[in-house]
Length: 97
Image (cartoon, rainbow, N blue to C red; front, side):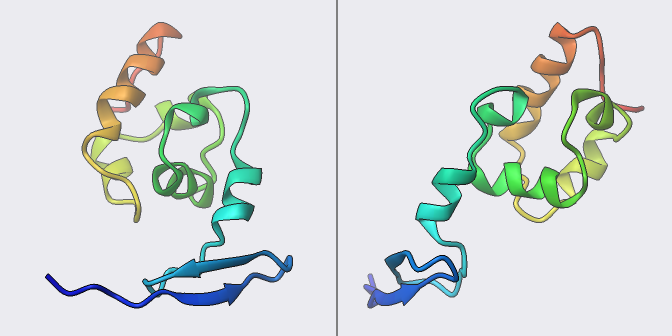
């Protein structure tokens, strides 16, 4: 197994952090961006960013998309769909067919 060397980085907000991947996301900024209420709090950061980048911030916006459309978003994994399906169901909504 190869161990990647972590490099020190500084984000545009001045936070210092170490990362071994090419991912430019600052973990400090990401933690500060995490919502405190709503269905997006149930998701991991990549899935949450995928929805936000697609302009999906409400359950009604989510219900206008099919599961296939959501899975095509970069950062969205198949384990997220059951969570989204359940939260839609609680509100009497569902994915578009």
